[in-house]
Length: 84
Image (cartoon, rainbow, N blue to C red):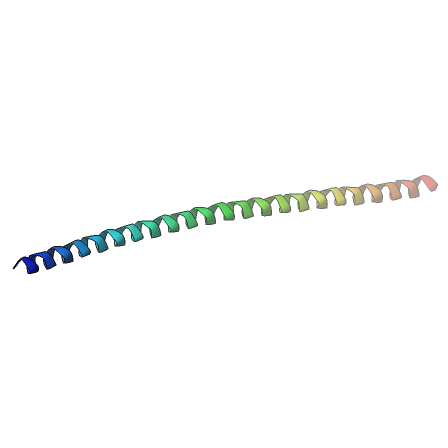
């Protein structure tokens, strides 16, 4: 009788330990997933910002290049007109 009671208590204790371990593992998994989501969001935000900077830089370079080309064409036209 005492052996059965001791066995039941041991099994109950093992079940309780298993339940706590599973709860901790589940919580750890949730925390890892949360951290991964946060890291992914931060990485994606950095990538978006870098793309924006790159695109802005390219637009500015193109704008400057086009302005310089217009100025050069204007100067060539002006020079051609003043030679006549």
